[in-house]
Length: 280
Ligand SMILES: [Zn+2]
Image (cartoon, rainbow, N blue to C red; front, side, top):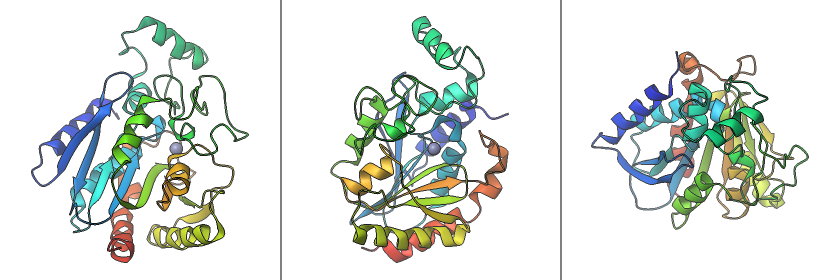
């Protein structure tokens, strides 16, 4: 059975690897370490790869752990395999590990008085991290304004400690591209709607290059607000893409036993992207 313990054990074993740089860039709401790994040169522009911002999409964490192990390029890359550790732990263990009874009761109520948290997407405060960034924050029609297993934008943009820490980490680094792994649908999303025509055209070109080896479709992300890719592409002008891993036929959460099919061609995709854009 999938377990949070197995994912953290794998992260801990990577920390010990001599050829992989590691730093803790902060703590989650429940005090878990937020891990960033780096491989390749620090010289020149870098690639950013993030995963598991949505809790039930923890298969994406495993994809990034595999990429960290395989990565052997000169161009530098930062990997953040587990943006939302509290959420992933809630999906895999439920809420009994949480000491704070008030918080436990709140999460239980938010989850419609159910102990089954397997479809949870938010963090441990019921905020959906991927609508909490400062990019048309709260403007989507799917937005929720109260704590929820998904879709709650939070009290204000970047209200969540996981997002604040992530943005602090990103600041002052020079990225040529960002890839955010989610699940599911076999789709590459590109082109936040506020971007200008030239930026969208450029993003579409890169999205095609990402999608080709994966045999995924590409979709312009209309109606998306407050996402990491939205914010990075619009405010920081980093071409940013959201990759939705896995066929829609699979059920959430996609089990780690599916990793071979899900991981297929991810490395090839990365290799192509680095070859084409990594030397900029
Ligand atoms: Zn997602």
